[in-house]
Image (tube, rainbow, N blue to C red; front, side, top):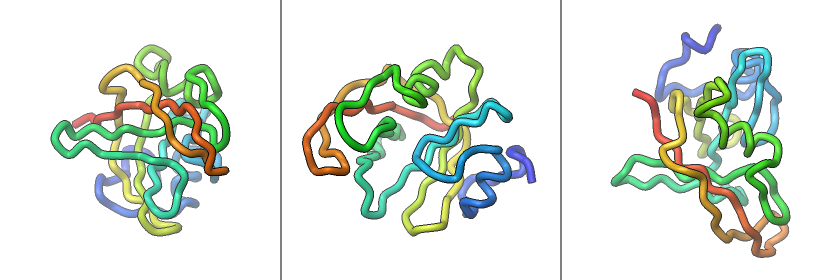
Length: 138
């Protein structure tokens, strides 16, 4: 199966995502240099990540990478996503509400500049996080 074979709204396994995108099998931001893609996993089940959809604007505010302590815009895949408008990396979004089931949402892009917010980390302590406003490409 290839990226072009994916269908919006269909569910895929973690293994399928790894095989299709040639990316890692863990984390909410998975970079693949082989396919020149960044796979984003928006989790909603008992997760420290506070990803939020704005139903009016159809924009997902996706929390950046890093579980504990302040996040940085220049850290790892946060930088890849922040520069995705100019670095040639295609960004794809999956959502998961149940462990092991990933619903494909399609290709996404930054809808606005990333911004800072305050959220608790995995350790419960407040910290600075980077939020990426994303919208689907149709």
